[in-house]
Length: 249
Image (cartoon, rainbow, N blue to C red; front, side, top):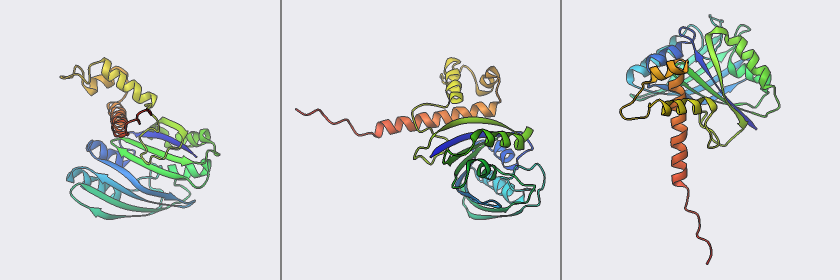
């Protein structure tokens, strides 16, 4: 089995969930379960954030003109249902069910067309970044998958490849299976260190650093967060490893 990890960065006005999360940068949505057949898709999502952010996310899921996972840029007449399974002051759990029409397209359905059946999906949505991790057999055509996805997305989002490798047992779509950062994350951290972003007090803020790197502020913030998350988990993993046994006398 192989894993494919990539991200879409949505332009304003192209995805209501992305617009909502961009207005609430501390909130996020991750998939607990996601399944697709040729003409259906159903998923359970777990959102975290402030009460205001969760209310806005719920409204985005329940009242969008078309399903959040559909890549159509206008109503495609799909049959969709979204239900709130749980809503507390800090978390929101949503169940969504979607029946396609010939006008509809989605990442899971495009993936099925080019990577085969039996796919596993894991997603995380923060600000305008929508990260996907797909576990597949390795027998499909990844290049054709990305070509169709890029054509379907059009000008609504920028695509970024994060990793393609042998699948690891991790279920976190944003963590690497080894000690290496994705090249984009490594470059972001290196630039942040070199320009004093991690100094106290900081010598540069994230907006200035993004301008220096000629990338959107949200992209840089996303890459730094994912890199910091990965490095922190690697550190904890090393700290929790048992001590090496003493050599025999």
